[in-house]
Image (cartoon, rainbow, N blue to C red; front, top):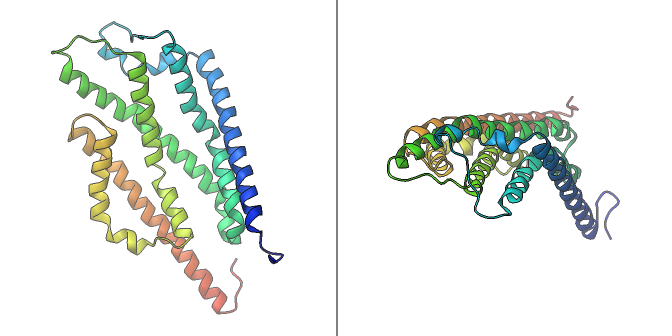
Length: 256
């Protein structure tokens, strides 16, 4: 029989099920709101901005009757993920919070806001920096040899995957912070792999940017590696706070 302070395993599963349901509901609502925003404010025209200078007065083309709706839905999903992200992260925190100490719960809101902020920063970097550089390289490479017929689905699929990938990569400090809270990584461990992280940053940059393997990748590698250094700092702060708490408890003191 479970103790009064513990939740039975089946209750954990039931709670997890409801957390997933609420997260999916938030995602559906977010996509619905995004669909209205994208349609009413004509965001599809705005999103074509980066590629227009390379089309020489032409427009993107579509080859199937359903392409217009498909692109509208795809863009709405991307925007809807951003809208629903705070709720999804809160559901993750609510499920894990019983296992956290009081001081760990205090940082939940800043962590959630930080995760959303980092995702937006990553997406903005992809939109304003990575995408224009990549398009410039790709079009300069093929403009002289081929006639252009860029489809709507190809362009928006490219943009969506790039923006979401950059937003996900920028969540690295939050992931390391959570791993440090649960004692799975330490700043010493992370510091040992700085050289590997530098190489990994370049590899990730080269994968995300399907352009040249030097200028664009190097330019993107710098912020990616800085995220790793930020992760080390966050891990250090978490570990130091744990050590201070342990010393206070061993001395019979109650931490503030």
